[in-house]
Image (cartoon, rainbow, N blue to C red; front, side, top):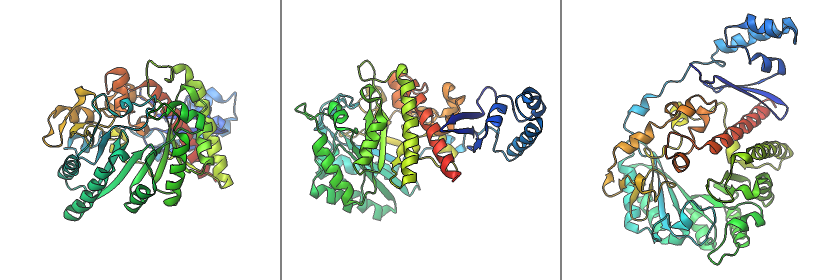
Length: 452
């Protein structure tokens, strides 16, 4: 295995936890075994006993070595390396598209990666013809795959509701013709939600990502309307009405935290206390500004994730729990190896479509002209780029291939790597560190409830 990490162990919430990286097996252990694993490599039990017999009972050490040996034999400890699946050498199938129906927005959020909606170009709306062609594109390039996904995105997609409705109608027509099944999602800031479009979104089973940053003062500091005023009150009312109308299902309330609210746990809990139970908050990705996250913030952010994890457990046990996206980890039935290596599939299985039909590797690459792949009318012209993205999996990233989190984080976000390092194979460091802390918290939560 060379110098790759084979196990990862940590102490959190009174629990000693050990992850076998290749197998994904999670073991809750005691302090003695925790210390033994600084020495034990699967073959050197005698050395472990000799080194620690002045700290622990020798008979207990010998018994523990035998137990560890059983785990090794079952390939739940020091499991063999994973090979790159053969699917990475096959022609990729397009699984999902992000449809930018509106390059315009009715908010002016300070941290917006989309340039307040225009993605660095002119403000524009997608036509019905481009929307139809995008649906045809995914059908034509998805092979025998039955299940496809389409995300309505912006800017603010509700600013182009006629095209959203037209595309939904066209999708249903093409489903009947082809046997495909589409999952539809829409991301909205909530300003334009009203009774009519809430009913439409619910009636058509469209999943929703709702943007809210937590406490009113936090949200209004960053998410301003065109007039420069806070947007919280109206949006909160709209979101409450929508979630109530769909019985609290099929949505995620998603926030962004910045250097201004490093105590983001308070924002998560505020959203939970407002009646929302499907939650996510994401760290801002920004550079050269006063709200950017820096390495000096990491200790505080680690504390916050741990605080959130403990509160997550407490509320679950008290019957008023909520779901948190980054703690939603199944340690027994997680994604397949190919998915764990490739992540979102940006640039080869997932593309974004600009209002004019231009194709990009994902929504965050839109407007970065060097990543313009082609159009939905002519297809992918830069044939080498999808293969470049396809091969940018964790085992081909030097910094990822040795990391304990390599089979869970999928190598991080390509767009963030490009933004900070001009190289999709060189991950964004702060993003990596926060992802690892979230994963430790998620593993601890899963192990905690598994022991109940």
